[in-house]
Each structure stands twice: as C-alpha cells, then as structure tokens.
Image (cartoon, rainbow, N blue to C red; front, side, top):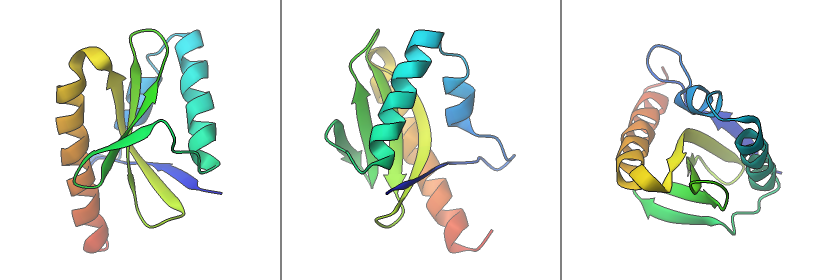
Amino acid sequence: MVEVREYLDRSGQSPFAAWSDRLNRAAAAKIAAALARIQQGNFSSAKGVGSGVYEYRVDFGPGYRIYFGKDGEPLVILVGGGTKKRQQRYIATALARWQDYKQRRGTGR
C-alpha cells in the first residue's frame, strides 16, 4: 500500500485540494478513483515529466492530470492537478512545488 499525502505550500495550504475542490462531481469521482489506484501502487497511467515529478493521466473530460513526486517507495506527495490544455504550465508549477517540498523536508521544517 502506498501512502498518499498532499504537498502544503509555505502558508500551509494544499494546492492539490484547492484544485480538486473546484471540480464538478463527476470529475471529482474520477480523480478519487485515480487516487485509489495510486494508493494500491498502480502507476500504469503515470509517466515521468522530469526531476522526480510524475503526471498521472485521467482519461475523462478535458484530460485531467494529477502531479506527484515519490518520497521513497511507500510515500507519494500530491503537488497539483490540471488538464491537458495548460499541461506545460501545470508541469512547471508541479516541478517548482516538488523542489520546494524537497528543500523544506531536507531542512526539517
């Protein structure tokens, strides 16, 4: 079993939660199902996008994406979500959040 946690920015807010809370009911259900697959260790719909960040594709609506990093084998940190339309922007943001997570984790803060 994989533990899934949300990245918290420096103000203590979860960008993933802010994104997912804005989804309609059907999209939220698809994202919840994808997160359940991740918790089971099923990364078949994920691919690396660089620097330790992965993009999990959800084939629904505008092509939802879940961005995460792996902190060891049993821990996944959700750093964001988005759609195919603005994919490059979401990837850049996810990469920056992952770097921030690793830096703050490394200093014990």
